[in-house]
Length: 140
Image (cartoon, rainbow, N blue to C red; front, side):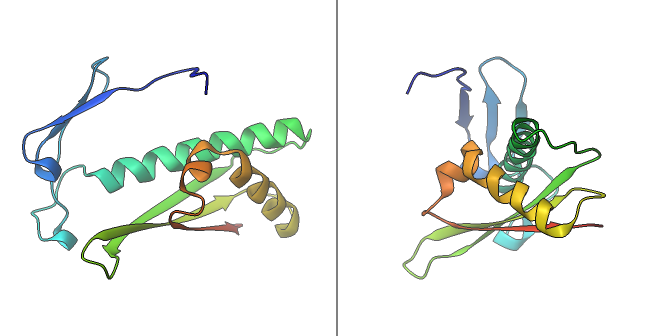
């Protein structure tokens, strides 16, 4: 693959309770283990960062697909939920729910655009076949 952009980050300290920073200095965060995993919560964690990245990436893919299909969309949003839980083999696994909102568009058309975005989104392509990702469309 010819890289068009490369993001680089370094994690230090105590993993989920440590620190993460990007080499360009844009992100520089102390992490906190969420309460659901036995930590104090109250700070960013890998699942929050993944949820934010996936939502933004999928939203960009949705807009790109709409432009390519010459479909006018406005005031769209993509919400994401990243779940973490035991995989039954002593480790953990992720699952993702994406909720796409395209106002003023019939449900079937919105679903078709969301499914097309799911085929081109880099996060979707990276996770496909590895974790469960559910894509739904809502009008609220």
